[in-house]
Image (cartoon, rainbow over all chains, first blue to last red; front, side, top):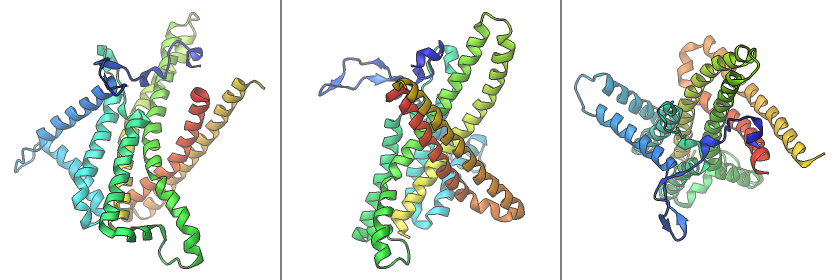
Length: 262
Length: 75
């Protein structure tokens, strides 16, 4: 269906292709090194370089160290606000989650197609965001049950609710708790997918408009679309940051539930 | 009606949900700004709640988008 809407296929960018190791397999399942894996590795490398450059612990921080401290301070204050002193232990996890999602989102926005590399947004795949969400969710479960045992189930009965209402509210709260990993994963995945499809559709307008036979199409369609696309690109950069922040924020809230119950 | 036509119509109708989410997100940020301008000192401490409200409102619009995508490419 996508081919009918123009020569530019907006879904092609989400294709996962093996780069090498096409024959590698475990029990019949391919474990080839794909472009998805490559961009995840790139995100890790970028993060590694960023953190190494800023962890020299100079007494008077330079620009780089100030940038790294800005990020760590941001996540630490978020955890302090939402979880309290007990949350300090989990700052490294939330920080890695935030930085990885941010780096993966931003790397997918890079115009590296100019040098012949196909950009790929790792977080635009439900499998990747799903695993990240499951990590957060299982961490919440593990912490909750390890800390409170079966008392953890009191999370599903809101404060001050007794008797019959507790019986009614328990399944509702339980379902809303079980929906958490899905909402976490879906939000990030759909936000990135939708943004990238929108950008590719607009890019299709620009390219098809410039190539159109009728001369009036280029100034009427292509140029306004191009200006709009610049704005949308800036908006997408904002969305990248907001989605990473929202993922980390919701993770910290869920951790708060597990650590402090109510 | 042909099945394909119905699919496309359904995907188009799902766009209404996305527009509704736009209203919701606008409402979240609008109300926040309104009250932040009344009491700027308290605004910074509410930023976390602002984004929780934003995330909740946005998710429902994104679900409408997922419905549209499923209709177009999967169903």
